Length: 110
Image (cartoon, rainbow, N blue to C red; front, side):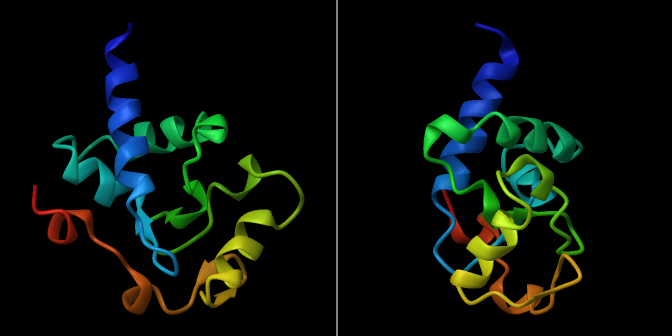
């Protein structure tokens, strides 16, 4: 097993804990996992999470932009999934990010 595999599994576990109607960022997950400069690696992990029952649509960039949307089937699946959870999106950006932001650092005091 590559060392990245263990990190990827940790990313999946954190992402599975994001509540319905909430989002977090790649950077917030990376920081929570003790690797604050690994936001891009979190994105790579989520790109490979399709078969793992991971709500990857709930992870966006630090500005609330749906930067991972091209990895979802269909034209706007990521946006549709988020909107179904009550999240407002205009021009691929979450409008109420501060209201729906879930920070694993404070929510998962492990």
